[in-house]
Image (tube, rainbow, N blue to C red):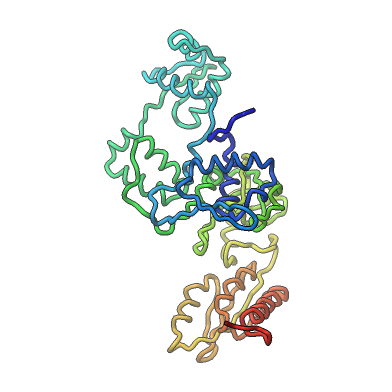
Length: 426
């Protein structure tokens, strides 16, 4: 029987466990239905070995719940980065990791045949050429080695760049790495560079640090590459709102899309992919935390035209949703009449002006203000409008379903908080 190991082979699987059980959490052992309970125990112990100081346990009638508890304003390093440093390796992986840089340290370019022979004659290690070729290809992709072709033969040489040399050469680079390792997208890259130079971030703390985003960084990097090259990608998307135990085995829906932009919510910090779905002839947004990049597709010949169309469509998005709109769809204008005294409640008017986004605000009476928003998805508008409950005089436009939902929510709130006849407040 295979023993327990802290190392992982598939980051996507680990990402799912950390996200679903320790971040979005409040699940217990019995909620795990993907494989056996033993698998859950192994994954839990693996995460505990990385994040033991940040885990919080709570016993309930359903069982013991574990969650990650972190005050992002009091840590200098995202603890979730540790998941990237726990990748498993074979005996050949670890031996070649040390032997190849040592062999190529003199800067001389060598062919695969020369490298394999030298490993045998000078290091006493016999490897199959296919094994060495695979590792050389991996190191070229990682930037550790460079490759150049002479005739029909590929030669490999050590790049020779060391992060410690660069830090010594460029004043302020170390501080820049300290800052962006926690602040920018793909910060784990900066964090790994700091670790390579044996430097720690002991200067910068970030009050609003969405540490969970690093679980999306690998997907984000692939999507950014596709945007840069104008390629299609094949993604697997799960429903972000369905995180129940019954949905554990849900595999998601596969789409071929043209990635165009990464959108970030200023309210929640969530990140979204804005993409075009050719099969449906429409734009759509996917939450990155429920997205998996399966593979790169072909180059999109109409990429620039599609990107231009997206820019035009974004002028009719209140948030990140395009609703059910097709290419030739229509917007759904919503109008809200809101009561606010300009003398004693000027802050309400200021907020309307600041948050109206694509809306138009006008004063229709001394204490009445009308805001009209033409949006593809009026549901997003109504979610924001609910923050003005108690001041809304009327709602017009949108769809009948949206208005009915809004009034139903008000009715339900009144029954909960408005004082039904049999309510007893103590």
